[in-house]
Length: 160
Image: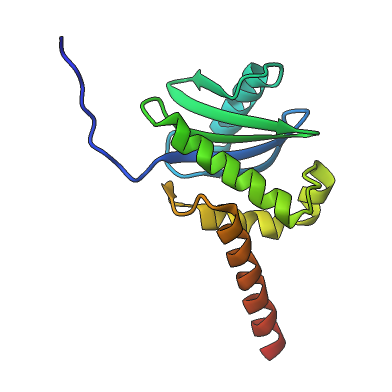
């Protein structure tokens, strides 16, 4: 019985994706070179969407990757990790992102509201994951930091 023991790594997340109900990319952030070109990324995203948009499960194994996902109204949220990654860790990132956006968008997590508040999405993802390393899993903390960051940006823009 030959068991492969992998080195522990902080680099848990390979990508965070948000697509609409037609499978079009609204947000994508890749943290490694698994899919180096936009063409490869789009093909991967199409494959993920085709495999997941009609199922009620929350997890899939696809192309050697673990994909956890959630849908809401007209959006699909995905967090991708390697095949040996802990699904609960990936799910905590997904839930933190969704709950943070839900708070910031006043529970109106749908395409139009998300597109009108993309800067909040960018800040939230950057607070949750940095370079594939999970930094935060508490939505309250993420929302607090996004608000702080927005206040600082307003302050600096007024000083110019």
